[in-house]
Image 1 (cartoon, one colour):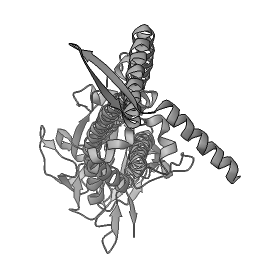
Image 2: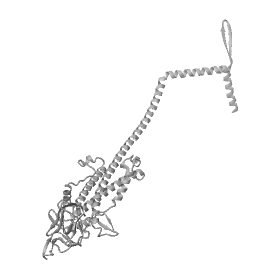
Image 3: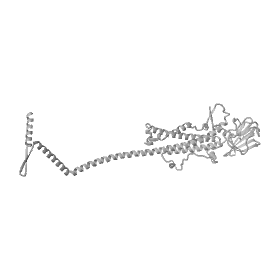
Image 4: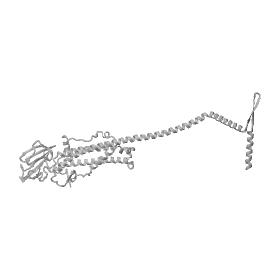
Length: 457
């Protein structure tokens, strides 16, 4: 092994001395000869310089020869890089456009939902105002009827404003709800709902509301608000339907008045009505929007019509003599066929007799105009009041009369005092109700008036 290594080294030294032996270059100039001695190291340096020079020449030659190919290769790499960059930019632009489109859709949905909620809020506000006006009329009527029996029910009992006409035998029963509490809760929710409440929960639209309710508190609150609005409207419609049926039942209880005909007759004489304007000339156009919006609008329209009907019914009821002329009525003789107290034979009795002590106050059972205030042989001292719409009431056998012909009287206004004038056997008031010039049974009118209020302890 050592021999081989030594042999290689010897060969390299031999090659070195052979190639790079000291050489002399002779230069002859102007007859003189000079020489330059080149050592092995100098020769090695010159060889290296020559090698570098030749390499540079070879590189430049190849570069010149293959210049176009090199440029084309570089261009291809550049084009490929540019295409990749443009594709990346295009993808980013598409992502941006998609996000921007979603934002525009979200804004449109936000504005649409906001407008829808505001419209519903406006309708509900108008409905509530109209309902309050109708309730005031109904409350005033009930309070007036409550006053007619305050002496009869004097004591620690409190009256609850509650229609009871539908509690009659055979009448349909309708569930009752505390609409006032629901109304206050719903309106408070509507008034507290601002843009921060609506906000980002509308990004994905109403279609995905049910999926996001569990995880999105804003969307959950929106859904709750929408349900509260719908619940309130449903309850309002049910309540107004029930109250209309109750008031119509009261009118029907008189036995002679047909609700729709009588209300139309009263309204035609100048009773006004109102409510939110919701045109239904072209239902599909006027209630444009989603089916939910259209259904809500139609429901609000029905409620508005119901409230108008309630207002008309309230006015109609206020013209019907449903009260009693005495605080304590004690009927001593009924309407219709009876034994006459003077002849002791069967005869027709055109009213009811209510016994009471002398000078007991006698009150008007409905507002109207006095058409007679004086003496008639059979009736004695008589007061007749025209309530309009074909209705009249008479109060006979009075001891004294406190009104005169042409006077306008209010409900429960004093018109006279109990006596025994005319064809009478003792102190009482003979009370008649006439409709279209025909005597009717006053007991039915009084009984209907009793169902206006239900007293509870």
